Amino acid sequence: MSSYKVMVLGGTAEAGELAARLAGDDRLATVTSLAGLTRLPAAIAGPVRRGGFGGPDGLAATLREEGYDALIDATHPFAGRIAAHAAEAARTAGIPRIKLVRPAFPRPAGLVVSEVEDMAAAAKTVPTNARVFLAAGRREIAAFAGRTDLWCLVRMIEPPTVGETLPPGEVILGRPNRNVDDEAALLREHRIDMLVAKDSGGPASAKIEAAAQLRLPMILIKRPDPPAGDIVPDVEDVLAWIEKTLFA
Image (cartoon, rainbow, N blue to C red):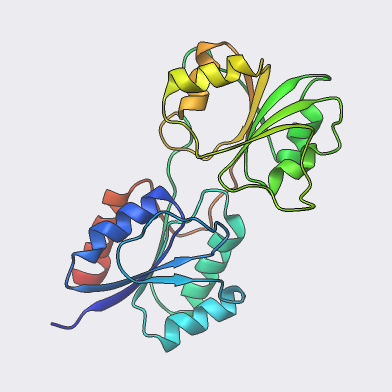
């Protein structure tokens, strides 16, 4: 049986789930592409490609030369540049593309939220002398480095590198905790006044539930709009799109 070749642009939990679901489908040859920004990614089912493509032209060339039939963009909601490159590359290569975008965070009762455009705006919005939990990527938190009046709790999956720009405060290592009580205890232990996070979406995370429970204000960074084209909110809809696009 001939198979269709599908590329999944990954790096998210949804991409991992999708890879696992597609790996058992004999009609498909699926490759998950990882940008390689995190050195300790979770295990991915099936073949994995690591590293960039050299922009949309490089991705389009790979899609054409390696005979891909479809492109699934399951990257992070804030990976706006990658999403734009994926849309352009698929058009250039002449293959169908779909973007998986998980819904925005729900707002639990009791949560006080301010939305801003980016991390620089968040850094300007935080009140003087606040104790802040920065739940964002290591590249974004540099916006807070100049706020020497703040005390910032930063959680990283991997330890900071030598010379990395960090805001004043403390770094803890580990992945986000899924237990609301544990997150609430962390916020109380460090006497946190406010949380700053990107609206990465999905079910309300433990840190957001904990903030609502403790009545702590939160600043959320708005997510960028995805490129025009097919957009779905979950893995099941991607699977339905594959059936309709490749096998109908």
